[in-house]
Image 1 (cartoon, rainbow, N blue to C red):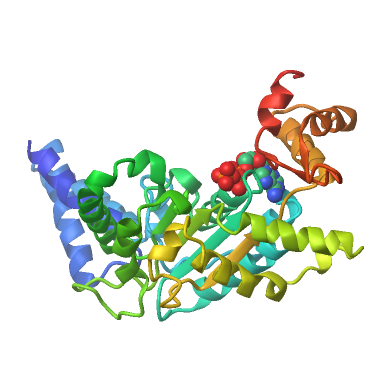
Image 2 (cartoon, protein in one colour):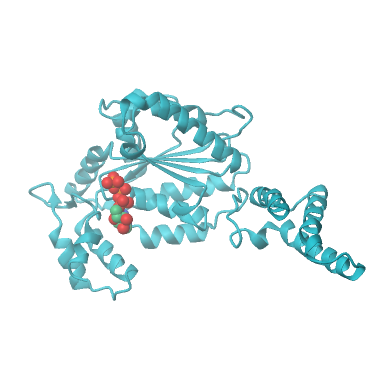
Length: 356
Ligand SMILES: Nc1ncnc2c1ncn2[C@@H]1O[C@H](COP(=O)(O)OP(=O)(O)OP(=O)(O)O)[C@@H](O)[C@H]1O
């Protein structure tokens, strides 16, 4: 009972520590450690000496989060710098056919994390056809922010149809979501919230997220400025495809497509689209989205690369002819030209299963 109480007092100190502990906190730890080890040894001077020495070592150990963060517990580490090279490499090596998304995400994250005093949370809106890599990129972002990636307790994924399925429960969802965001950001300022299927999210819920994205210094004593919000949607996918197709038909290289060719059209397109939850909300109207990130439709060569990568990840030697076979099994659009895979890379993994 006694030991358990002491442990309960130590764990929150460790869990919230992101810095070297202050003198008073060190004394507290020393005191708890003596309490912890005191009863284990008898009260002779030598044993007390050993207990105090052990307690000092333990205190020293707990005072330096870098020794136990990641080993004993997962720490928030909101001051941890981003490894820009690692992020760049991940995007270059793992993400295919998305030069614009690569560029925007890299710049956005690098700038945001290196800013010690951001004016607002980072809000990224990822748009594109199914299977083009929106969830995949979110995972890359999570992996680069936290060692445990999507499994981190500081990364939260919401899927509209799974977490907010019933319109009649929207008032309840709103309350629950707001307290979830509030509770988690108060525990860890660098919390990541990913909302998948934004186009299916009830406008009321989008409005519930809105206050957290704004330029407030503090909301009820909590600052949200270091948190990251990522919104994924298929909204605007047709518009992006149209632009890429125009480019292709004009004989231009896909890689020459620039963000400015898409960004304005994309934000206006989503804003004016009745079917998109965004239309109802004022996230866009109030300029709360920092970056629109377009995901381009994937071509045969990209699908082939996805198949090769999937084989390597599963521990097989990447077989180009098999990758080609799988890519040929996918369906492509528009009907006449057959350029873009209509499911992106989404079913590549299950198609490969038939051959491995
Ligand atoms: N551009 C890409 N580069 C590399 N792999 C990709 C890419 N796009 C998709 N993939 C692969 O296909 C899988 C499915 O893609 P993902 O879930 O990211 O698609 P999505 O755009 O989020 O689709 P949806 O809109 O249907 O949710 C990924 O896990 C990844 O393995």
